[in-house]
Amino acid sequence: MKAIITGGAGFIGSHVAKFLLQEAHEIMIIDNLSGAHKENIPDNCQFVQASINDNIEKLFIDFAPDIVYHLAAYAAEGLSHHIPMFNYTNNILGTINVLNAAYKAKCKHFVFTSSIAVYGHPNSNQLFDENTNCEPCDPYGTAKLACELHIKSFVSYYNTMNFTIFRPHNVFGPNQNISDPYRNVVGIFMAKALQQLPMPVFGDGLQTRSFSYINIVAQCIAASPFIKDATNQVFNIGSDEQMNVKMLAKSISNIFNVPLNIEWLPERKEVTHAHCNHDKAKKVFSSFYTNNVLIEEGLKLMAESVLNKPIPAITECPSAIEIYDLLPPSWSSRLKNGF
Image (cartoon, helix red, strand yellow):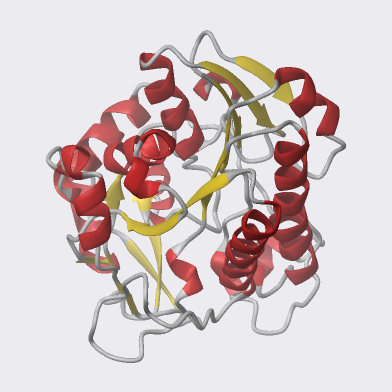
């Protein structure tokens, strides 16, 4: 089959492409390379450098994909409070543009990566499941939820395309951008360890996340159009294992054999503990969940990849800051000139 992957030069997208190539699918990758690297793209993929907000309709029609995997997004939850117009333009309008193009190209299945951010702050000690009420607490999560709702209503109205929506969380592994100072804490810490610089931690570092190695996430996303029970469904996807940010810093220090060195920063507004129930995904994608990689093992695998590559140039915020109020001081010092 023929598939288009938006954001395919990025972290998750490049792994999805790899798994699809193993099944001999024909792939076109569309990426503007704003936060990704062309070197991530597997061989034998057609590549077009373009934004999801560009006029991409003819590109889609000419390629005629059976499946579209829409992974392109600017996924910086904390920073999204300060660039809301950019966030909504890129993440909502970009998704609408891709969905329109997919429909006009007669695509049969649309796969969308949403986020755990749609849930917002937990209202109890219960894990988020797919029936948990969504109350996003930042513009990024709001955009992802709006995209989910639009995709569902679009598919229901036109009735010519199926969808699968994934809500991944805290994914890490090879090909992740370690030079973005505003997102991907694992990558940020590894970049600091390589340079023997302090790792920035907001608050007390006791915030917990279920850090998820890339393999299960990418395999489930890639396989979803070919699994009947994944049709027109929403899935939490990722690992159950929990770790706090302070312990993450310690683990990465040990792996890179450098002293633990933390730069303690003022607490910022964020979800303290965010974890998902994955029972639904484990049932539908059971064969992939037998290959779960634990956090420590995954960190070592990612470190091996990081150590074999030069540190890329800093990936700065792609937009001028729209609202400076409450911007963390460590970010403000970088962005004081507007970028």
